[in-house]
Image (cartoon, rainbow, N blue to C red; front, side, top):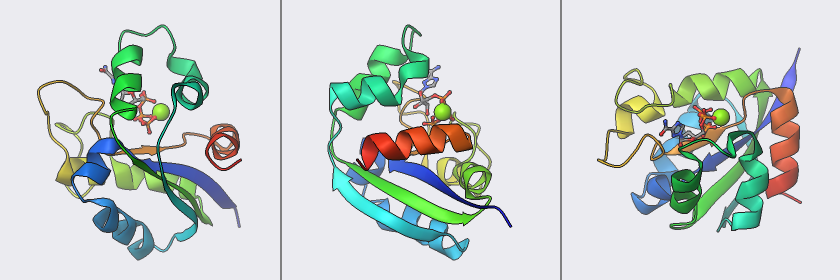
Length: 138
Ligand code: RTP
Ligand code: MG
């Protein structure tokens, strides 16, 4: 048994496009528990912490601007191997090439500006999950 917790964000494009319910339905259908859930707005300070590893990369500033562009839904999921499992449900980073059947593959596309509009975030390791849950659910 390896029950884990992971941090999921429905990014501003997902909330704005009214995909929150559809995304949560896929999470629950897969058998994961939504342990915490809130609609919130990011701040630059929160994003600097959350995206610490990406600071200095060319996509960092556009990513932060995008994440500040509207409300976000933050969730903590629980389940067996949910960290890897949610990333599998989400699909690869670029929605244009993410596999059909995944959240990014089914709902995302290239919106002209960016890969950053890819609907969801999911923690990528147990260490990231613990760190990110602490940022969004203090
Ligand atoms: P996430 O962290 O959001 O779950 O996505 P990820 O692991 O698949 O992607 P990551 O490499 O951690 O990048 C974080 C977010 O930055 C945006 N991004 N833009 N080349 C680009 O323009 C670019 N690369 C990454 C995406 O929003 C990505 O989800
Ligand atoms: Mg990542």
